Image (cartoon, rainbow, N blue to C red):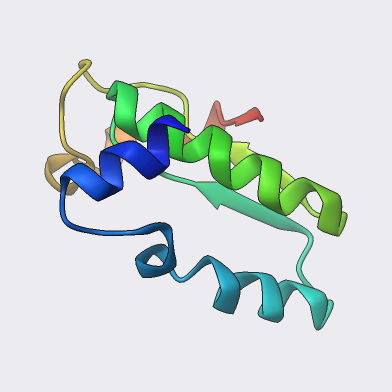
Length: 93
């Protein structure tokens, strides 16, 4: 899978995304939606799709921010207005 391969190239594995911990928390109930916010890159999109496939079977809505950012940009540098627009336009995965 692209995400697994990318993480391996970066010296990280899927376990470092703390997915198991998130799944355990979701199984406890009370969560209606997970909003995935990844950078607008091929790797970010692959990670969002990977996470969606793992989380949807748990019965929670999985959404992602719309790409209100230039492709290749980093979320870390987004201003409040851009983030608000990205949240308002989020899409189901």
